Structures are given as structure tokens and as C-alpha cells.
Length: 213
Image 1: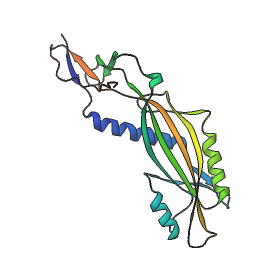
Image 2 (image 1 turned 180 degrees about the vertical axis):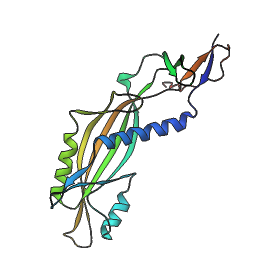
Image 3 (image 1 turned 120 degrees about the vertical axis):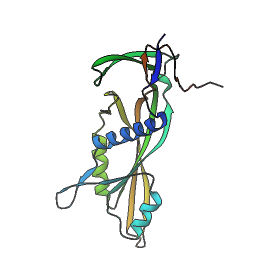
Image 4 (image 1 turned 90 degrees about the horizontal axis):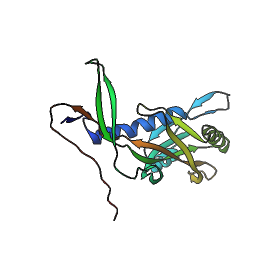
């Protein structure tokens, strides 16, 4: 009998890194910029996290550089349409560069999920906002293919767009315009992989199981 040795150091840490890499790849492939009054292309600073109150406060204090954008993950949903009907063991060969030989690893089938992100764009002028919104829409045909270390088939979709009003400053004619974009990414969460050896003992096997009520 073969032995299974986990080749994933920390499953929780891996998932956090996985989410970060997905977001980093998304922002790399849909860079935000606009053309200013001097016909110069200007990159827009993007902050990771929900910063609604901070942005409004900085705007009222007149120390916010606009346009500006914030992005954060709003949820993770199981993708039922792509879910396998049973637990399937996947076996594949990988090349060990150090040992200069192929080795066999096994894992459960990766879990299909939908990652939902909210991209909020903040601007002072409607013309700048329209230009940025048009640029974002143009990236999706109807999707964006994300090239990650784990897959070349990860798809991102623009699933919703809405105006979110304006924040008034002291001068009633001075306001901050905000538009929200919802981006849904269809991907698979990789499951822990185990190296198959020949010592005859299973050291560790961990999996997540969902039980319907």
C-alpha cells in the first residue's frame, strides 16, 4: 500500500494566498486609467478594502486625489452548476526537479466557486467617471480570462453596474461621484494534494465535506 504525504504546507494560508493572487491578476488585467485635461493618461490608485467613510472624510478635507478606486471581496458562493455529483479522486503526475523524476500526486476534485468583488470608483467630474466606466466595460468580451499559476481558464464577468449617488462637501456644488461595479470570477479552489509514496502508511488526509440539511 502507498503512503500519502501532504504537499501543501498550510491549507488556510494557501487559500488566503489564492484569493490574493486572483485579485492581483484581475487588477493587472483591467488597469484603471483616464485621460486628463492635458491629454495625459493617468493611472488611478486602487486601495484594497472597503473605505467608504475614509474616502468621504478625505474628500471633505480636500486631501483626496481623484479619481480613486477601492475594491474588496463581498462573498464566495458555491457554483452548483459546476459541482461534481460525488467526491472524485484525481491522480496526476508532477515533475520533481530536485529528484529529476516524475511523481504521482492525488487529491479530491477542486471545488468550483464564484468569487464576488465590488469595485467602487470615485471621481469629482461626471466626464471622468464616464470615461473610466467605458474603459472597464471594454475589458469584458463578455469575460476576462485570468492567467493564474493554477489555471488559464479562470473567467471574470462584469455582472452589475450602478450609480451610488454623491457625497456632498461643504460647498453644495462640490461633490464626490461614486459608481459601483460588481465582478464575478468563476474559478476552482484547489484541494490539498498528496504525494503517493511506497511505505504503506497514510500520514494525513483532510477534506471539507458539505452535508445538506
